Length: 233
Image 1 (cartoon, rainbow, N blue to C red):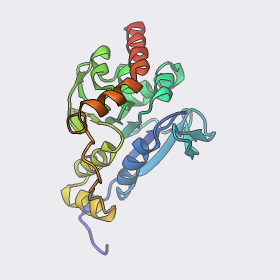
Image 2 (image 1 turned 45 degrees about the vertical axis):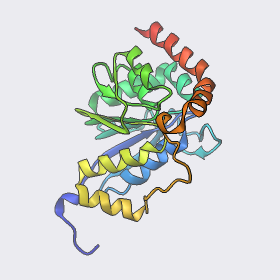
Image 3 (image 1 turned 90 degrees about the vertical axis):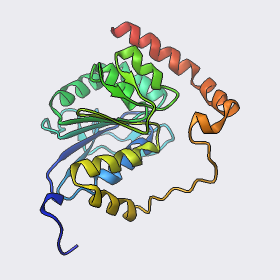
Image 4 (image 1 turned 60 degrees about the horizontal axis):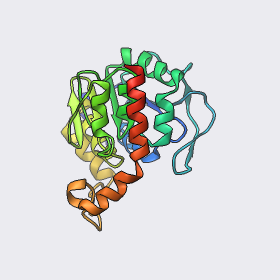
């Protein structure tokens, strides 16, 4: 573009936490949208700068470690996962990093079960939040208020529902940081116009049989998170 509104140019510092077993799409969708913010700096952050393997085997090399990540973040983002998220919720260094940067960040955010990590770090007590539908009610165990919405904004906490909600989360945050015109331009650039072959993306639309099958796969995860919540209260 040869010309654009002055407020389209920012200087945000945005950190995307990753950890072994995270769900890559939880992070990649928001990273694509927020990485489009003119003037913003993005940091993919791991405990160290060693390569991190996602739950589906995608390897990503962090650009910064807990030690080298900027301390004056504008946005802290946390993706979700399954067993990897549970392990991260038990990891003191990861929780301390989230608490430290979250205490100073202007916006604290997540997609999918990343909200459980925020909650385990004590950053969602008394806040409305969402998560993957399998895990959403677990937020209550950490003092958060679960809301069945694709994207939930409560003050400076912004949470997205499961996995693909990261695209909607990203566009919502882009609009908040720039404006709706900027967000619509990014939606067009991404050609984000979903036309899925099936209409089963929520429990209400998937039906009881499919929903029960998926929920059963996560019974142990749910039980383990509830046990963990009791241990840190």
